[in-house]
Length: 599
Image: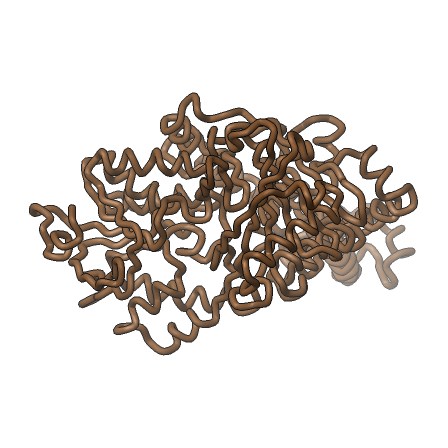
C-alpha cells in the first residue's frame, strides 16, 4: 500500500496494527500476525531489516553488525529458524579465544592452555581465590564486580572480567548493577568451564561446540521474514521514523511518522513498539508526566561501531571471533566472517574482519572520520599480530547507536516508573532489547514479539515476564507445572523451624515427663519410694520424690529441654539455609551462559 493511501486510512475495514521496528522482535510479531491472516504495518527507521542483527553487503562481502549465533533452548524458535532458511542454515563448529597480555586463551576454557598462558603460580592463586569465594556466605551482590567476585573469585575477575567489561561499557564495574550479571551470565563458572573442558558435560547453554548460522549472515534470516510478511499482505516501510504516538482515554489512536522528510499521520488500533523505550516515551509526550520524562532521560545506552576490513590473505586466524581484553588497544572484539561462513567472502583468496569498538555517541571515537578509523583498525590488527597493514585493501565503517541498554545505578527505578506509565495504555506493547531496556538475546527478543502478537489475537501473556531462558510456549507448560510442584515440595521439606515453638514443646514434654513420673511414684507409695528417680537430686538441686520435688524437676527439665531444643532448631535452620544457598549457587553455575558471548 502506498504511503499516501496508508495515511488516508484505507484499511478495507480491517484493524490497523502498527509495529515499530523491523528487528528480530518486530519481524517476529509481524510474521505471527500474518500467519493468522492479519496484515500489520511495520515502520523501520533504517533502510533494511534486522536491526543490530542485520548484515551489510559491500561488493559481495557480507559483514555482520557483530557476530550473531543462532542458538536457542526454545524448540519453537529453532523450528521457526529452520522453516525460514532450511538448508541455508549451516552447522558451525565454535572456535573463539581471548587475547590478553600478548597471549591467546582458548574460550571455553582449556586447562592446559590456561595453565601455560597464566603460569602455574597465577593459576594456583586464581584457584585459591575461587575456593575462598565459595566459602563465603550471604555476601552482598549489588554490583557486577561483587557478583562476579563472589562466584569466581576476585583474582579471576580482575584477570579476565574487569578489563573487557569496562572496555565494553565505558564505566567501572562497580557502577554496573548485578541485575545485568544475573541476567547475562547464566551458566559460566570455573566449575562449569572446567567440567565442559575435561568431561565435555556441556551443561551451560553457550559452552556447546556447535551452533547454526545462515549461509550469508543473519540478514539472510530477516530478509526471509520480510518476504514472508510481505507475501502475506503485511507492509514494511523503510526510512520511516515514528515521531509521535497519539492517544485518547488510555488508548493509542494514531501514529505520526516521516518518510523521506515528508510527515504522515495514520490511525492505529494497536501498536507494538521495539524502538528504544526512552524514544517511545518522547513520542507520547502529550500525555507523559514529567517524572516519566525524567525517568526516560535517565536511561543510558552504549553504542558501538564496527570497522570492516577486507584483507588480502586466504587465512587470517582460525577463530570466528576473538575477545580483546588487553587495554593497550581500543578494539574490543574481532570477527573473522570467513570462519562463520565461507559464503561471506566472494574470493577464496581474501578474508574479511570486523573490528568492533565500543563507545558512546558523540565521544572521540564515535565522531572520528571513517578514514582515521580504518587506519586505526588496520594498525591494531597488525599490532595484535593478526595481519600486516599492507594486506588491508579496503574498509568501511558502520556505526550502531543505542546498541546495548546500560544497567547503571538508577536504571531499575527509571524503568519501573516508565513501565507503570505504559501499563496504563491498553493497546500499546513494548518488545525486544531496546523496547524493554533489557539486555536479552535474539531468541528472547523474537519471543517477546510473538507473544505481543498473540495478545492482540486474544491470548494473555505478560511479555515482561518472558525470561531469556524460559521455555514459555504451550508445550512447556506441563514441565513448568511440575517444576512449580517440585519447588513447593522442596520449600515444604526445608521450611524454617520455629525455634520458640519447638523449644517450648520439647521443654514442656520433658518437664511433664519427670513431673508425672514423680507424682506416679508418690501415689504408688511403698516402703521405698523412688530410689532410682531420687538420683536426679544430684543434677537438680532440691529435688526429692515429693510433690514439691515434682515441681522442682519440672522447672529444671523444662529449662534444659527448652535450651537444647532452641539450639537444635537454630543450628538446623542455619545448616538448611546454607545447604539451600550452596545448592542454588551450584544450580546457578551449571545453568549459565558464557559471559563474553553475552556482551
